[in-house]
Length: 212
Image 1 (cartoon, helix red, strand yellow):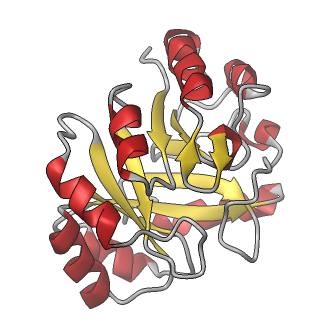
Image 2 (cartoon, one colour):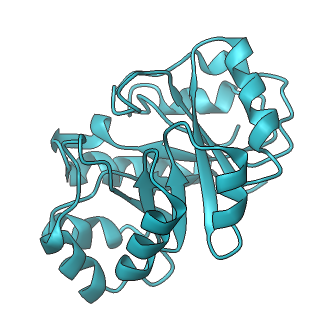
């Protein structure tokens, strides 16, 4: 059984990006949603182009953008992965998947919300499950992870929303064979878009013992 991988999302500041890259997360997320406090700018773009990402995949997070806009930004930034965090369709996910790895984010509150997975599981590479919120994530709150117990979603699952050092070990109590990764953001920040390296270092030290 492979350990859980880590996606660090909401990166923006060049030195902080470099510091987090030294931990070698599998994925690093950049938010292209203008309403987000972690919305990236040209300074971030320069850093992304000049820093050695090596095995870390660059993820672009989008909310209800067109395929043309997403592709244009992906080419400009050299993105490997596209995360769709709005009301995108399975058709859009499938189209983008022709050239990119695609993550579809879904908001979860109850068991019924998990039924959304069936619409996307054949059209994306990962499903990211976040706390349901009108602001498209970033709440720092978790949904009830026990909803995932004894579920087989037939697609790799990334757990998001309120993952912190206080609850991350609870992942070992989740009985879901599809759970492969966690997405961390606000609970590991000292301020929006600035990650707390001490907290992240502790998280990565726990990585070998994190298994669903």
